[in-house]
Length: 210
Image 1 (cartoon, rainbow, N blue to C red):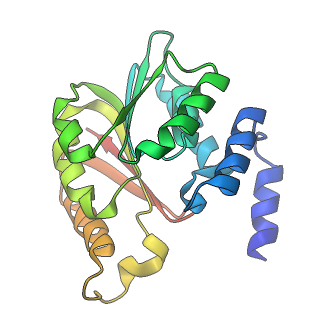
Image 2 (image 1 turned 180 degrees about the vertical axis):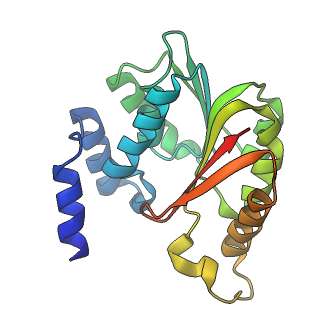
Image 3 (image 1 turned 90 degrees about the horizontal axis):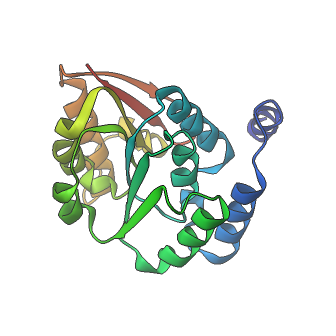
């Protein structure tokens, strides 16, 4: 039934364009951990949110092969810029290839390196922040970027239901789940933001700075 619903949804939203379809295909054929790709439905949600916001500056933490960056960058204003951070330098060629194919190479700056070292160098204000990297570091990412998010801006965090592990008892050594839980508690107690969790794929938390 779940597969039938997924197919139904895909058939009733805007179709995946040729560039993103090819990127999805190449990622699944050549890259380990291809399930981390945002994919059609999530990509459309990111594109729609970006197009509604019409941002000038977007920060993405975790590029992978560039699918989500392309989706977000399509909502940028004419002179807008998306900065995306990826720790794995082996993914840079495929991401840059598809940025060029999408005609977004001049709007996307890919920085290779550890996010915790790079984030302090990123200047605000930022209109949208998308977090989809090391879950252990989500609390630290939040601390480093929330003050750079402009009033009315969105912070979108991926994988925040983490296969349902967030509602299970803590397992010793599971630092990924611990990181997500700590991040969610930080957000829940932060009076500076509005927040909602969407049960989309592995959970997407949308946070609005007020």
